[in-house]
Image: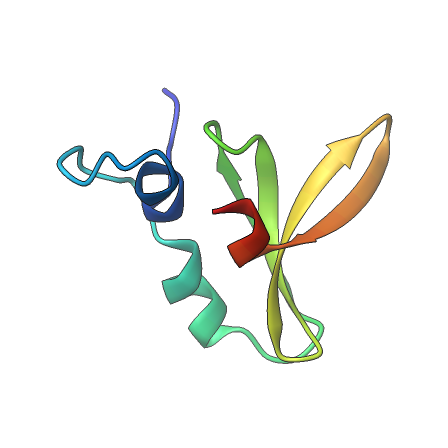
Length: 74
Protein backbone atom coordinates (compact mmCIF):
# COMPACT_ATOMS: atom_id res chain seq x y z
CA UNK A 1 0.00 0.00 0.00
CA UNK A 2 1.28 3.46 -0.88
CA UNK A 3 1.83 6.00 1.85
CA UNK A 4 1.63 9.76 1.48
CA UNK A 5 2.75 12.52 3.83
CA UNK A 6 0.71 15.46 5.00
CA UNK A 7 3.28 17.73 3.34
CA UNK A 8 2.70 16.04 -0.02
CA UNK A 9 -1.05 16.60 0.09
CA UNK A 10 -0.49 20.19 1.25
CA UNK A 11 1.87 20.74 -1.72
CA UNK A 12 -0.87 19.78 -4.19
CA UNK A 13 -3.53 21.74 -2.26
CA UNK A 14 -5.44 18.58 -1.36
CA UNK A 15 -6.37 19.31 2.23
CA UNK A 16 -9.29 16.85 2.45
CA UNK A 17 -7.50 13.56 1.77
CA UNK A 18 -6.32 11.81 4.94
CA UNK A 19 -2.53 11.49 5.12
CA UNK A 20 -0.55 8.54 6.45
CA UNK A 21 2.13 10.44 8.36
CA UNK A 22 3.57 13.91 8.83
CA UNK A 23 7.26 14.52 8.11
CA UNK A 24 7.30 17.63 10.28
CA UNK A 25 5.97 15.69 13.28
CA UNK A 26 8.74 13.12 12.76
CA UNK A 27 11.30 15.91 12.38
CA UNK A 28 10.34 17.46 15.73
CA UNK A 29 11.43 14.22 17.47
CA UNK A 30 14.79 13.92 15.68
CA UNK A 31 18.13 14.80 17.24
CA UNK A 32 20.85 16.51 15.18
CA UNK A 33 22.13 14.28 12.33
CA UNK A 34 19.47 11.65 13.03
CA UNK A 35 17.61 10.00 10.14
CA UNK A 36 14.27 8.20 10.00
CA UNK A 37 13.28 6.08 7.02
CA UNK A 38 9.72 6.95 5.98
CA UNK A 39 8.73 6.63 2.32
CA UNK A 40 6.36 9.15 0.74
CA UNK A 41 5.20 7.88 -2.64
CA UNK A 42 4.04 11.38 -3.64
CA UNK A 43 7.41 13.06 -3.19
CA UNK A 44 9.42 9.93 -3.97
CA UNK A 45 11.34 10.52 -0.75
CA UNK A 46 12.74 7.73 1.39
CA UNK A 47 13.15 9.48 4.74
CA UNK A 48 13.83 12.61 6.74
CA UNK A 49 16.89 13.90 8.59
CA UNK A 50 17.71 16.78 10.92
CA UNK A 51 20.80 18.49 9.45
CA UNK A 52 21.95 21.80 11.00
CA UNK A 53 18.54 21.92 12.72
CA UNK A 54 16.75 21.89 9.33
CA UNK A 55 14.37 19.23 7.98
CA UNK A 56 15.98 17.45 5.01
CA UNK A 57 14.13 14.89 2.90
CA UNK A 58 16.18 11.99 1.58
CA UNK A 59 15.98 10.78 -2.03
CA UNK A 60 17.80 7.91 -3.71
CA UNK A 61 19.02 9.13 -7.09
CA UNK A 62 21.18 6.84 -9.23
CA UNK A 63 22.10 4.86 -6.15
CA UNK A 64 23.16 7.95 -4.18
CA UNK A 65 21.28 9.49 -1.26
CA UNK A 66 20.55 13.17 -1.87
CA UNK A 67 19.16 15.67 0.63
CA UNK A 68 16.59 18.35 -0.15
CA UNK A 69 15.13 20.86 2.28
CA UNK A 70 11.61 19.80 3.20
CA UNK A 71 10.00 23.16 2.55
CA UNK A 72 11.67 23.52 -0.87
CA UNK A 73 9.85 20.31 -1.75
CA UNK A 74 6.43 21.47 -0.54
